[in-house]
Every structure is written in structure tokens, then in C-alpha cells.
Length: 590
Image (cartoon, rainbow, N blue to C red; front, side, top):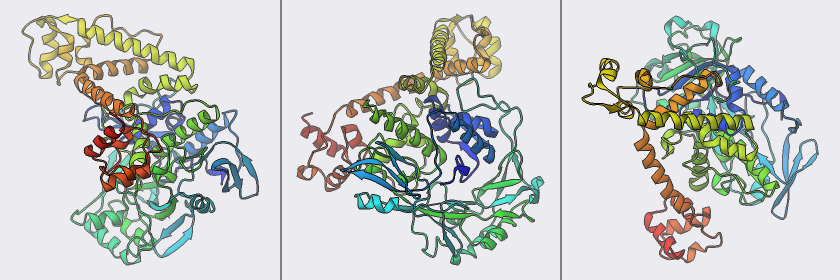
């Protein structure tokens, strides 16, 4: 609706985070631009959860909000066959259950055999600040009308969700001496695997503060005027990113809550108060802010607000993100009930790929749960649905040791190359990496060392001396030792000039993780193979579940609604029990 806000960060100026960082790296491995744009606009980089195992490591960037949007606009305009039009889509052109294009507010009909809706928080959107209520999907931007009503008339179910954003504060009014500094990594990384992405040479710090009972009391004084507590907001908000008033109400026994004070960019004093999302009256927000450490003289650029908007339960979609009700129509992003830039980005990529493949009469592109976090997200949405804004976590992925952020290119770039989304040069880089990983892992497994060689290196690091000649792989399996600790014992491990230093760092990280966690990875692969066998058992879409009296009533209802295509999909629907699966297997002759 406004070409000036392409790539606008509606909420916090950051990309990645726990599980979300894995998604950004998967998008990059598949040829998407999210990682590259984030790298070119970041002001800080941190690898979260370094104290835990590699399955939990998650990259996160703090970004320059303005630069992020500029880089996105420039990246899109460099794509020859992407065209733009500033207008509002007010309706779909549909004939005999198939999409034919869209109709715009200026009366233009744009024909197309595939349409992807990525409406964000704008459909029939209402913004709330205290008692104030007005139409809009984002500060300063109007709501979108017309699409929901038409989709409901076509037989789709719709619902309402809520999200929110915190106040923005003038950084010149903050006394940073009273805040705890949170600098970036000393050796910052990047999201993109491409050599063109370069780590930051300087970074901006974020800061940490905590609320207090005094702050909570001020916020509580506005609860009687809060749209959340007076019932004016009907939509369900995000469980894992609640408003500050939600936190105080739900966790009333907690004396404080942690907040992050985040810079909005290199050349602005605007500051984002992460964790202080609210729709309370403006004067209550300001009074509470001024009781935070270092915020005694705080000035707000703009208050926090809540947005209520329409969404469509995602169990109405195929795994391609094509709707079951209208052929050629795809949904991606918050229209499917998700929250977060990263969750929306990967859906947009997958819907775009499958919209194209459909036009080209090619097989759909679907990622399994053991192939990508993207596969987990889409499978969760389709098979389980969601009644609250869906956010990705590592705990949602049962194969998270296989789905690490560091191996996204090894998992997905071959798939992207087959689709034409990864260049030959990029594929060659991945093939070289795979070959070197295998060669160096083999070297470690075959090389043996004598106690006299190894003990001077390993004993000072808190591990016991060798009693006899041992293989290097046994040393590396010791929890006290890292690959760098035993590097002097390795032969033929020089780094050649044909690859950049970051490439060699990635190779050696893969070698270490592959050896140290080989047992866990083997178990996950075995489990994935069992699940894949269930996904190979097809279920016809014409099955009349109401006639299968041995199924539970809940199973009959949910299977009739979801219409799973495979036994594996059926097994992941909430409420389907092992006995229900047994009945289905008997019915299918298994």
C-alpha cells in the first residue's frame, strides 16, 4: 500500500534469535535475501546460547531500522523480473474455485494464475492505546479492507489475533551509566554463508535494565483503562512475547522483569525498549518508564500500542501453503497466525517457490521436519493449527541436533541449486566444504598419537593422561577438549589460499560437531527414518472418517477437518492417539 515502507521493521530492529536465527540461515541457504540484507544493515551480532550445545546456538543481529529497509528495497529492485505497484488489493478474482488474479483499490485487475497473500497485521486492523481506538495496521499506516469478507464468503474460517509494540524513547534522555551494557561478540559472525557477507568491524551495544514493584504499581493503575482488561481487544496475543501488563498480571509473584534497551541504528537516537510492549494509556506508559533505572528524564518519541487483525487458521492450507479452498491461492506470514519477521520470511519464500512450481507444472517443494526448521514450522501450522500467534522455538523441533544453524547450507543449498535458486559457484563452495569435512573427519578417526605427544596438550586442560597410544577421535570425544586444543597433533591440516578464512572455520566447526555429537545425530536420523516411513503411507482425501467407528470421536472430527495426506501427518495432529493410528493402519491394509 506504500512503497516507502518495503522492508519496514514493524517491531524490534533485530533479526534472528533462538530458533529464529536458524530460520534466517536456512532462508539464506535456499537463496533468500533475509540473511544478506541483515548482514549489510546490522549494528551488532551475537551468537546466543554459546554455553549450551551446538543445537542451541542461535545467531542474532541488532539492525539499523532505516538501513534494513533501504537494503531490502535495493535488493528487490536489482531483480529483473520483480515489478512494483503502489495500490491496495481489495479483492480476489476467483472463478470455479481457482484464483484468476486480484482487484485493486484503484480499479485495476491484475491477472495471475497464482496469488500469494502476505497481509501482515493489516486486514481489518485496529490499533489500541488506552481508551483510544483507530484503524491501522502499523503506526502511521491505514488498515486493509475487503479481503477477509470475500474469503469468508468463499468458505474460509477467519479469526482475530493481537500483537503489540513498546514505546520508542529518545536515547539522549537516558542515563546509560545506570544500565548494564550488553556488547556484541568479540568475533562477530554473519547470517549468510556467502563470502560477500563481511563481519562487523565496529558494533553498537545494547543495554539491560529491570522493572521494579514501583513500576508495576504504576502500570497497574492503568489496568482499568487498558483495552486488554476491559474487553475491547478480542484477539489472542502471543504467549511467548506478552505485553508488560500481561507479565505483571500472569506472573504477579515476580518482583521484576528484564528489559533490553536497543539502539535503532547508527545515526539515530531513537531507542527500542524490548520487553515493554504495552497498550496502556500514554501518560501511564511514560510515568512507568520514568521509574526505570536511568530513565528518570525519559522522553517518548511515540507510545507503545496494540494491533488487532484478522488471520486465517492455517489448517486450511496444504503443505505447499496453497489454500485447500481456492486453487492457486497461497497464504504466507501473519495471515497464517504466526508472529515474527523470520517466521513470515520463510513462509513467503516457500509460498513463492511453490506458486512458481505450480505454474510450471512441476512437483511441489516441501521440507520435512528432519530437513529444516522451516519444515517444522509449516508442518506445525498445517497439522496442529494455531489459536495464538505461533513463534518458533528449538523445543518445537525433535531433530534439532540435525537442524543446526551451522549446517543449513549443507542441508539446503543442494535443494536450492536444483530449484535454480543457488548459483553453480555457490553449489561448488558447498561441495568443496562437504569433501573437506569428510576428509578431515576421516583423518581424525584414523590418526593415532602416543602419550608423550598428547599429554603436554591435554593434561593442562583438565583431562587425564593417556596410558597407551590412542586415536585422535577418542581425544576429541572428551568433553574438556576442543579441536583447537589438539590441532598441533593433526597432520596435513594447513589452510590453503583457495578458500577464505571463514570457509575453513566453518569446515573445522563441522568436523568437531560431527565427531563430538555423532551418537546423538545417529539416533535422530534413525527416528527421522521411522517418521519418514509413516509419511510414505498415503491416505486418500476421500476417506469418510465418520464411518470409522473404531476411531475416537475427537479423531473423527479432526481427521475430517485436517484431511491429512499421509499417516505421518495424521500422527502429528493434536489429539490423534496411537490407537487411532492403529485403526487407520488397519483400514489402509497395513
